[in-house]
Image 1: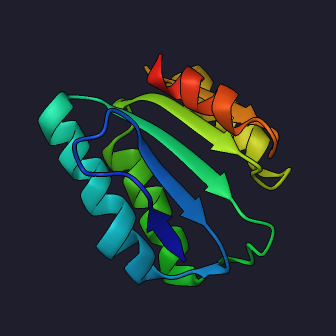
Image 2 (image 1 turned 120 degrees about the vertical axis):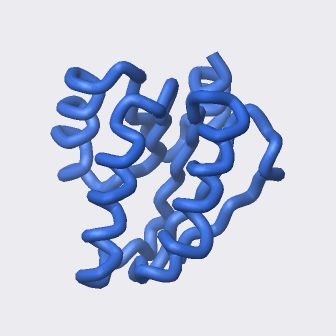
Length: 120
């Protein structure tokens, strides 16, 4: 499940991830918010926080995740990742190196630091 805890016009969109992600999580929550932010502001500042009960992605959700990344390759100005599974870090570093935006991972207890960084 993906839950957005911010209003559409907030400068940083905050998402919490738990359980197993489905295509509807992307199609109904994440993609529309990112699309709207890019349309409104030209760039996206995003904070994603993983909960301990995260169980991965359904197959269609994995494809939606890849589509989102490619569609907005250079639209993420700042992407803060909190408590992500350890295997996410190499992908975050790669995305940081090849995209125009910045990506940074944070430990679970660093919410305030991650939010401050995402705000710039």
